[in-house]
Length: 258
Ligand code: BMP
Image (cartoon, rainbow, N blue to C red; front, side):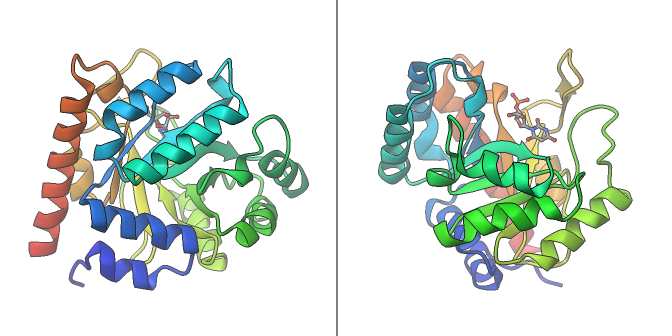
């Protein structure tokens, strides 16, 4: 089957937030999501200001931010409008439905109230997504399922567990619009693949993370490359983000031309 453009795929996506992601990617010509995995509000905002213009998405882990407050959310939302990116809180919900629902809507972070996109593990069965959806759909939110992981020894490794994630996604297309995975795992072009574990050189870290290059993950069907320390630790973050954006966008356009 020929590769469809992100604009065409937006029309096949049944989730409001998912369409917004595809459309942002097409409009900005960016397959880059950056995660500022830093622990203060000032550092998050500083790094997002440095690289947000290059990104279709900014992925956060708000539970590591020591001074999280409503103003951080307000400023991030403002930057999301100014610099045109989607906000993705990488909460990886994994509990039974009722608990996941409470965690999504309430607590210190009130994730559903500000994050366009979140994600979930499928380990607890379909109840997690079913419950998140009850909160997310009225707010036009979307969810990615963690179908495969980038870390050494992961149990989410392409086998029956990954297939179960695909089944759950098909059952909830209005809320689930894709996967966190190391390669494309379904032919459904309305689903998006976000791949973490990306740096300019293949390698890893001391705690089990494994890195592949933008070109190699795009060749396996990634639509968004998820990059953290490859940009965060670069001497010039903006230049690094430009390079990741260029390499991944070129790989996408090459795919379209195949
Ligand atoms: P880094 O590029 O600095 O290794 O960051 C990768 C990011 O992607 C982290 O925020 C991590 O939580 C996330 N991630 C991952 O590394 N592998 C996965 O399989 C799923 C993830 O969400």
